[in-house]
Image 1 (cartoon, rainbow, N blue to C red):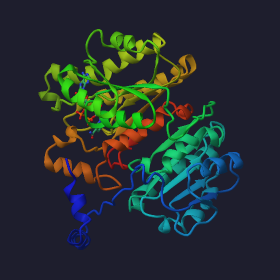
Image 2 (image 1 turned 60 degrees about the horizontal axis):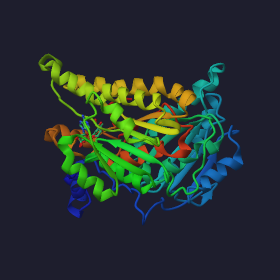
Image 3 (image 1 turned 180 degrees about the horizontal axis):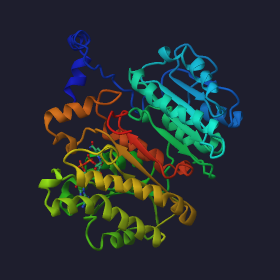
Image 4 (image 1 turned 30 degrees about the vertical axis):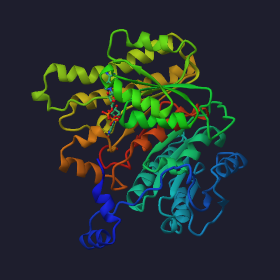
Length: 439
Ligand code: NAD
């Protein structure tokens, strides 16, 4: 599971060899730790043209990142480029003019967040300019290197609605999220009393939480104050028990494909559930021509059908209600496709369909948001089972030239589960280091 190549490139002979041979040089990413929770350095706040967001609100939100904010900074740890006011192709010159001089000096593991506006349905010049930001961000993410990330946030309402999103994207928590566009709506949202324990008083259920990404998600939600229930198959009972005990969480051994699984989950939360994380997933790879029907259905049953059944039951029973959060797990395989994974990719693309269709209705009818994370190559037992050469290609074929960690998916999930993330709904956020596979 360990990425030996990454470790090797951080030794003196490794550095020498990779440079001589022109091999990828993955940066050591700055990830969140209690001792090192913010980026190191200043935040440069730049604006192109006339912003469409209220300046005072945006200034307050940027200050909340804990970074000193300046109009110009020598070696910024983060750059926020407010491009919400760019409404014409010629206006894009301002994006170049402001970022060209600073891009080289952004610190290693630094962040660039470009703020955009929703695309106008009536002004195609504005829509062209705003969509241009998307291609700009994706390209800059591919060339910037040194563990630096570039993302675009489209703000429909005020900056306050984007506070949880900007705090996340401008922190070490988003180390493996790059080249993404996130849309933030204008619905009202509640700021938590304590941003360091935003889920205090809430319950969370994480499926597939005995190990891997699910265990990391459970740990992160516990850190954020939630009372967590870890669910996994009865077969994984021992590992589940150990994980739950280590985290101070409760264990629920249950196969999510069991006929009564949704009802049993509903019964386990008589006082309601704040956060539901659909993380359990399986692969049974084989090319379609060689795939027996049970391989197909076992994957679709776990990864998609049970997710739909549990979601429907918990919403209908009111177990998930006002302020509730659903975070489902897709995959870049569901976006780009993968040979040998027709079953898996179909199930993960299905998750994206579920999110897009249900999100607006779940918000309107139940006050619940529905989003998905789409992991790329994450170092877990699932990817340790991939043959060596494919594994090595999967690790390197992204803008950060390394695999992600379960914690990267967990931090992204925690942001989507945040009480202040109500305006973030119907989003599919890739946690893939900007994988070269897919969009
Ligand atoms: P993993 O195999 O390490 O863990 C998955 C967990 O789900 C296991 O503990 C397993 O027992 C549990 N599970 C499986 N079937 C279940 C069922 N019927 N009922 C209850 N629990 C069940 O996998 P992981 O790498 O941690 O992946 C977690 C999620 O992330 C999965 O949905 C996976 O498809 C997705 N994902 C992973 C990667 C990656 O690179 N690891 C990439 C993209 C997406």
